Structures are given as C-alpha cells and as structure tokens.
Image (cartoon, rainbow, N blue to C red):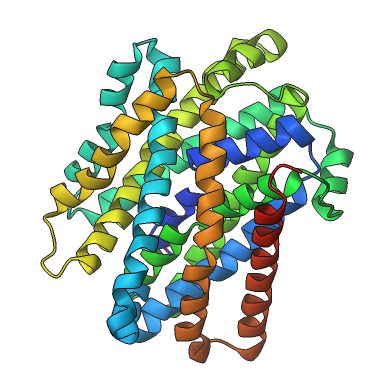
Length: 376
C-alpha cells in the first residue's frame, strides 16, 4: 500500500522550524518536563488530521469550502484568522530557512533572505506534478528524521528520564507559554485545513494507513527534538538558533553541529513549501477572483520578508520569534478545530467525536493559562 500521499505533506507541520523553536526553547529552559506535552500534542494531532481527512474524503469538499458556504455573511470575519494562520506559519518557516542558509554557507543576512525564498521556486517547479511533489516532501522529511536519529545517538539521553517525563504530566509556573507554543507547532491550523482539501477521492483504508504512518513517525521526530535540546542545551536559556551548532560541536563533535544545520534546512524547505501551498489555498477561497498561484505564493512571503530581515538584523533572538509565532497558532487553533468538528462529527464514531471535543477543551484551557500568566 502506498504510504506517501497527502498525509506525508501535512506531517511536515510536525517537524517545521516552529517545532525546532518551541522544543529547543522548552528543552533549554525546562529540560524534559514538557516532553509529555509533545507526545500529547502528537497524539491529538494524529486524531485531528485524521478527522480533517475524513471531512474531505466523505464530503468531497474541504473545511474552507464548508466554512464559506455555512458562514454566509459572517465569512468575512473569518478572513483575518486565515491571514494570521498564513503569516504566522510562513514566518516561522522563513526564519528557519534563513538561519539554515547562514549556518551552512556563511553568507550575509541579505543573501540568506534571498536564498530563503528558494522554497517558492521549489513549489513552482513541482506544480501540477503531484507524485513528484509528495516524494520530494517525503524525502526532505526523512532527512530531518534521520538527522535527529543521529543526534540522539550522539547526545545519549537518559532513557529513564525520557520515559518518566513522557508519562508524568506537570505544568509549573512559566511553562504554560511553552506548552502553548508546542501545541501550536504540532497541531497546526494550516495543516488541518490543507489535509481536508487533499483527501478527496482517496480510499478510506489508504487514508487511515497514510495518516497513522506519516504522522506517528513525525511525532517521534518532534519528541526527539526536545529530547536532544533538553540533553544538550538545558540551562543555556539564551541560546540562539544560529548558535546551537557551535554549542553542540565542542560537546559532541563537528557532526552534531552539521547534522543540526542540515535538519533545519530540510525542515525549512519542506514545511515552507507546504505552508505556501496552504496559503495559496486560503487566498483562493478568500478572493472572489482567485489570484494566480505564483502571485498567491509570493504574497505571504513578500509580506514577511522585510519584518523578518529587520528583526534578525536588529539582533533579536530568532528562537523567541519562533516561539511566539507558534503561540499565535495555538491561540487561533480552536477557531479551526471547532468548525472542523462541527462539520465532520456526523462521519465519526461517538467515541472519537467526544475525544476530539474533550481535547479541544484542554487546548482552550492551556491557551487561557497562557493569556492569564504568560510570564509567570
């Protein structure tokens, strides 16, 4: 059975630069204490991605089509939410690409910014070549996974600590913000939207197998990010994303720093191409007359280029920028989850529907904690 398909594309959302930022920040600040959030977010994301795929498979229409038809005159109020999703997602991917190019080539910032838009070219070259596109994204995701497998071997984490913090939940003062960023980085709104629009015509069994295989594997890689960060970077709270290879190399050898940079580049290329694809889909539904695909792809990136370059040029820590973009995604996530469950629940078992609504309540609770005491 073919395991490469729509779920391969959306699984990249689990291992994008936003995940790098959220997990490295959490691991360096709190060690492994938020590892349970990574596993929980991964499990919930598998469930929600499956539900998103079911909606498209059963109805022949994606979530945005349902929303646009069902919301009627309220549809314009939803447009700012879509722009927030598109801009926050693309910003995280773009920052990851820029830093990866700086690390691997040593080029100045303005050159890295230009190179950081290569993903738009990648998507243009693969346009209308669905199978090649799926394979290219899958290959890049595999490189990220292999890279973190190597990192795990190099840093040799404490297996007993990993098991303990995977199973014992806790949320102490100051951790809610990072928990929200992990949730936003894992259960990504644009991936849910995109998946619902990509499964039309698929066989149910193929969709189920693809979703489980690709997203469980991606969840494991996501957990590996935090395990590596907690083992190698704990206590180095102010570390910048571009400084991590220099921290890893003296401790674990040159291979550790190089592998990290390759993983970040592969993650940025794959996830950025996917986020631009999702952005194109959103713009096509927002405007009565859909913009051309090249223009749609360039819009989100064009908006993000200048502020991203200014933030990095000012010397602000890109890791913090990544964390806050993922918090934004976590805060708007319920605005995607609730409509998704409303439209898809009739095609789900009662048990699955109940679990999905209950999990949404948990996400809302963590978001409220973040808003009430973000720095406590």
